Amino acid sequence: MSFYEQAVTYGGWDDSVFDQVSASDVERALSKEEINQRDYFALLSPAARPYLETMAKKAQAKTLRHFGKAMQLFLPLYLSDYCVNICKYCSFSADQNFPRRRLTMDEVEKEAKVISDMGIKHIILLSGESYQHSSIAYLQESMRVLSKYFSSVGLEIQPLEESEYEELVASGVDGLTVYQEVYNYDIYKDIHVKGPKKNYKYRLDTPERGAKAGMRAVNVGALLGLDDWRKESFAAGMHAAYLQDRYLETDVSVSFPRIRPHAGSYEPKVDVGDADLVQAMLALRLFLPNAGITLSTRESPELRDKLLQLGVTKISASSSTEVGGYSEPDNTQSQFEISDERSVAEMKRVLKSQGFQPIVKDWQMI
Amino acid sequence: MNDPLTIAGVDLSSRLFTGTGKFGDHKVMKEAIQSSGSEVVTVAVRRVDVEAGDENVIADIPADVQLMPNTSGARTADEAVRIARLAKASGLGDWIKIEVISDQKYLLPDNEETVKATEILVNEGFTVLPYMSPDLMAAKRMEEAGAAAVMPLGAPIGSNKGIRMKDMVQIIIDEIAVPVVVDAGIGKPSEAAEAMEMGADAVLVNTAIATAEDPVQMAEAFARAVKAGRQAYRAGLGPTAVTAEASSPLTGFLFE
Image (cartoon, rainbow over all chains, first blue to last red; front, top):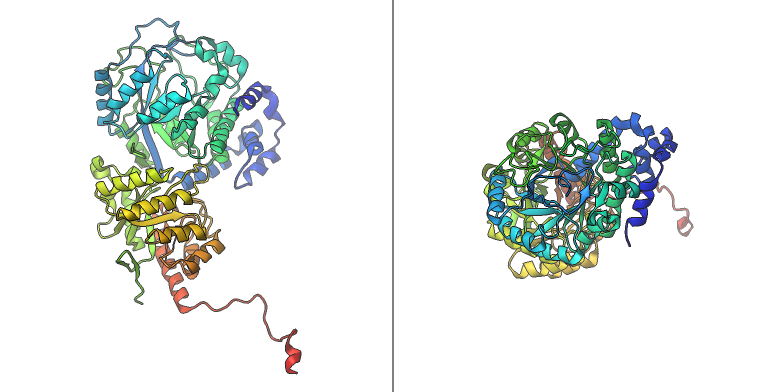
């Protein structure tokens, strides 16, 4: 089994496919307590746009019931920016010229200390995609250092084999984030110019391999701006549902990253407005009430503060997207510019003022 | 009315158990626990952060309540056992609510794994209160394994749907000798009262209190409902009849 057939189908739809949805389809979806795939589709359509407020109220109530007034905080830790892929939209792309760097174990520890001193217990490890530089052995060595500081560590690195994920789970890694970037097959092939990332299906099946290997949590998403956001977020939501249905033990989350400016300045193909982002998030929440929704510092403080009430369950704060960026800021190339630079302490204050309890620890390696 | 509930030698005058998750802040949580009069409070071990100082949730649980750490996050019996040991080692006491959820979509408890964890933890000296799907055979196995109480769900957790599993929960109440605590699904005080009228020994309410607009008021409302339900149960509810029975159309001829 694979999500492949579905993914290629949704990604290949004509953009006008959502125009067939009528207002009464949307109203029918909104009248239900639990919605199905058809309803999810309807809620992503242009016809649903006048119903955003109704969707927001329902989404907020559902989030409250399933997750409570609690918001998980995490930070990314960049280990390495070596990358073997050439991708048109990414600043770590192998054809970008800048001095590459990989943290030594001393540097991993330095970064860990700074992050840990902020009161953060959950992190995600990121790297460019290089099997040589972000090797299993290197990650295991890093985990020996990081286990002392953090209670939960996730990965966002190059796709690996199931057996390799098993080894990493044994070393304490408990989460896996891998975005398909774009579900549209032709666009995927076009923007991933060179390198192993060109393999659409291998990447698509990665969260499934992670779930099989015993990752407690997997996170999927589409990089919004590479193709029509309705199709892409529908495909991402269906991918999450596919995983949730087959891997009951796995916590499934979805992210809605929008393309941010960076070195190489790739121009997004499709403009994804704030209302579009909100509609994508709300529809997902109504479709998958138990799925986590992650929000990064790509978005502005003003927008993030509003999005907190609309179904989000996990946020990052004060993130550095460069290797070694917490202990030595502005030393090298960042993966993308962050928009929200507020510190962990400031984010905690914002959360409290909005009635949320900031959660820094929600699991620990046992 | 002196009607204590005794669990593992601890006399409890309140039959409302509460939780600590889903609250917007610890201060409100503390006030809500106080206004609920609850004497048993459950807390997720995975969220307890002993290094957090003031932000440690334990610091805001009233000192005179019985702590009932729970193993939420556990996917297997083995994980639940390890979390329970961690709770004891962290000084959270030896009561443990076993929660083994191997289904992240509906969040339904895994009875088979829960029975296994109950056996192991009872042998290790824990006071074990397993959260379970209302299945009589599983409840019997947990009781035989030495559970101090069983905690069947009324409806899926966080659903606020009320006692949807009413008939199954009633069977457990009727057949299981250890205390039965209805846990999960109770969305309104009237539903808590309903569980108590059915003969449940106690109820555990978290979501409905924590996510209310005014958790402190809601906690008190639940406390009253639980008392009323218990009193009604003790007083003996009258039989209910759908229609008035003024005559005996089928057997009246016998006495004509």
